[in-house]
Image (cartoon, rainbow, N blue to C red; front, side):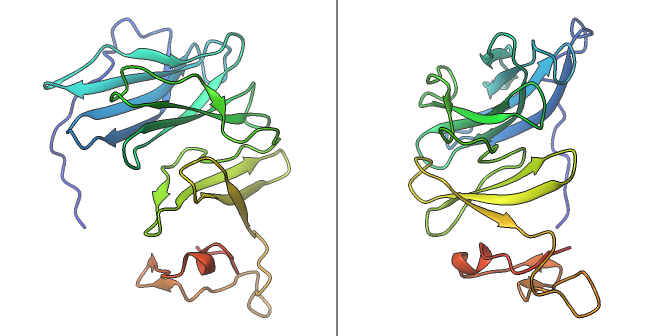
Length: 215
């Protein structure tokens, strides 16, 4: 596959943004052709004024960025846009740092003009559920699959969160960093889903059992 640069555009001009740091952009294309981009920005990454900003590309121009998620005194991080069918979802993290952040979300039914009241993705869970930074996958059976991780001073733990009811409930599956079925004498396990440098798995249940680390 060859990537081709079709166009280059600036959403947020450099002039007037010297006091802000922007990071972790996410992009989605809606069925109507509108492009929606979001990112987090503030005085610096992790500062209390960091919020989630969003812009739409319509009529050959990017709209003035709008602050769509902010909570006084708490940093916001890593927005992830997702459009599975008839509603635009925006997941993001809230917390003083990556070790304690939690996942929140808002939704829009009008191409990102208005948004729902922010809500936690999973109530009463100390883990940062759902997507951390990368986009969700929409499986052939309709399941939403979100790649995630837990960052601690000791180590990072990788996981996959799956929802079979359009985001109402989530089931977490951890990816073992020390595989149970390691090759004798090594710390590596092979998985037969690797073919020609790509991952293939027809059965979703097999995919989420994670019998080894894939590199």
